[in-house]
Length: 235
Figure 1 (cartoon, rainbow, N blue to C red):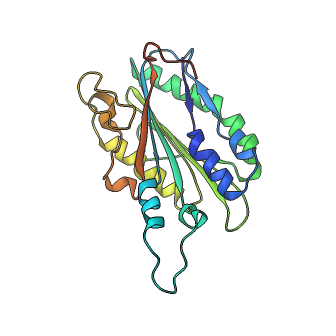
Figure 2: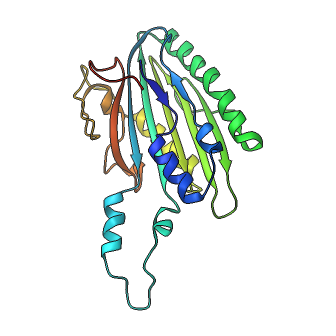
Figure 3: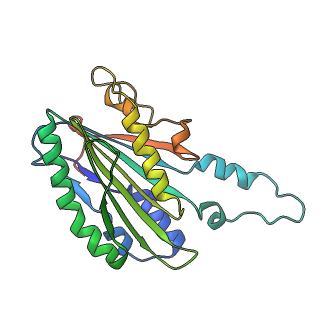
């Protein structure tokens, strides 16, 4: 059985390294064990982040006369990493209880990690029920922001989590959650591709490269969380 990671660890540690932060932020991003969630049918996740190819190309492009060559810190200072997860249940009651379990599992770790900056509030206009969670760490100029939207719509839970040095993290989370609510699942299980090009089925609910809701973010990869594909090691 796999877990829901509230932030992709690759992006989390990249931002921690850039910001020069310690382990508190890492400990503030919990994972949720899917075991014991009633009525679970499918769970998938897609990761998004900065376009590293475009960043590398900027290094290869000579700077204009008199202009400074951008550093990695310059290019990454507004970087954001996003995880979008969909859980499908057999009915709406299980979707409701499943969301409650995620909330009760995640909140203590987040509240402990972010301390006085932790905020949790109900969010209206997003599905049948939704919560917004915020936290931040760091000093002015190197602040990292955590933003999460957890919502239920019909037989589904959607989770959008962001860790970012961009002050628009809350706007980004809402844009991506809105896009997921506006999309429609396809028939069947769809086709899985770990490179982020999965299609059909519930994968159709997730934004893809080129969607306006992603801004400058690109898809980094896809993962099936449940049912775990045969031969996949436990996480």
